[in-house]
Image (cartoon, rainbow, N blue to C red; front, side):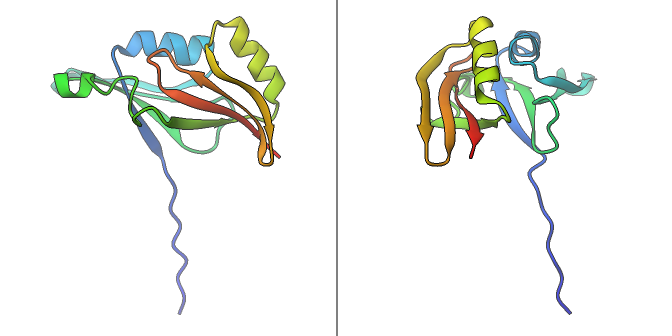
Length: 134
């Protein structure tokens, strides 16, 4: 008898300085959807989950840094490498919208064999690919 293992990533933690400033950026500027925002009073935290509009995949858990060693990693979760890959069905629509929202692109749009891509920074400096796959 063969069994099929089914797994998926549910959430990725993103260390942030402040929940509300992160929500202003990700929901207000990038257009992400707020999935959940619940207080966790016993830990003096909130359970804040966001996801790109229409996403059926992995979401982001906004995790407020609660110790100095965590604060050191805000904006540098991957040592300067691209951290997250935001797939889109219309690169130019989102690129232009992000530019009007003041999103900083650190690498301009480029046609690659795998799709159209540009690299932008989130409010903390983490690098993201905006990518429309071919």
